[in-house]
Length: 216
Image (cartoon, rainbow, N blue to C red):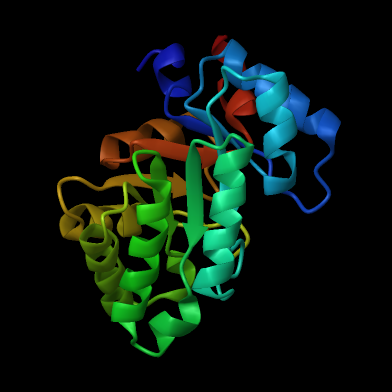
């Protein structure tokens, strides 16, 4: 796959706790320069980034990284992010509800956020490192039935990131309208190409330039 084609899969990400405005500006310029799919940035920077780079596709995170804030709080976060200029939302599910096997509640929350996002993109982070196989399959079903656009493997803040095993499992159990985003621990061009070949439509990483700079 050509390098420019690989860049088109990237959600260029900066979500560290102490991310500076200077780092965000660099991220945005890189994403535009290499025609990446989006930047994924903290909500506190969305409006500034949108004002400075109005042509940029901006993604932010909701309920991040632990997911256990209430649905009402997640809806408020989403509303503000959309008003500030975000076009894509990556939400974290309530893992407590998953562990309590209240899968219907998780589905209801996802659907509430999708209704608010509307025609814009909602990605659902299920944080696979904390889930068993049954829970992962249940989340594939919940994401599909709730009408979300993507299922996403990881926040990058858990005990592990993306794995090919999880991507293959998702591919088997999501509906045809749901896409897959892999994130966490993807550090090489070979990994990037392999995840795309496995069925991922987006890759979340802060290392895209490093992975691909040798062939720019």
